[in-house]
Amino acid sequence: MKIDVSDILKKKIFKKNLDVNLKEDGFYDGIEYINFIGPIKFNGKLRLIDDILHLEGTAILTVELVCSRCLEKFSTNVELDIYEKFSNNVVNKDDDCIFINSDEINITEVIEYNLIEMLPIKRLCKEDCSGLCSQCGINLNNSTCDCKKEHIDPRLAKLKDLFTSN
Ligand SMILES: [Zn+2]
Ligand SMILES: [Zn+2]
Figure 1 (tube, helix red, strand yellow):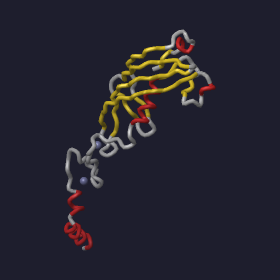
Figure 2 (figure 1 turned 45 degrees about the vertical axis):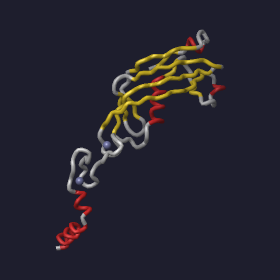
Figure 3 (figure 1 turned 90 degrees about the vertical axis):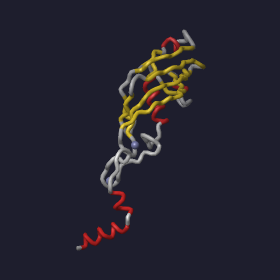
Figure 4 (figure 1 turned 135 degrees about the vertical axis):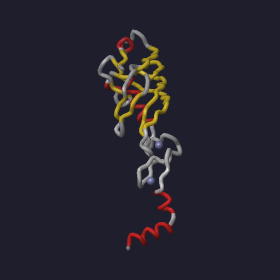
């Protein structure tokens, strides 16, 4: 969603409150496609200080991720504190500012960028997710298999050796 900031850039106003509900499907974060579940709520304000537009606010959203361990989809609620600076003046380009060459700022992009920064590389459905069995691939969170036992018990392993050498 793009927010029109022309009035503030033209210095007709110096402050603008934002209270928006964004309806977005999702985006590819470089690792996986992240689905948004329900609208993204953003509440914050824009302020113009010395030609620099300051965006400050909080985004509340629900995302659907894939667990790094068991590969199941799970959803999680996220609260993002957002603070970004924008400028349409090239002079401010190095000042951590996002350069804008129009009268709009793309708030969806800002939220997505902040979300990527905040999400861990290892995304787990739960802290103690048991993951998948490395041998049969079963999801060990809701089922068990016999692969592990066979591996742990050395006597069984020996027996297995006997049978395979015959
Ligand atoms: Zn998991
Ligand atoms: Zn198994």
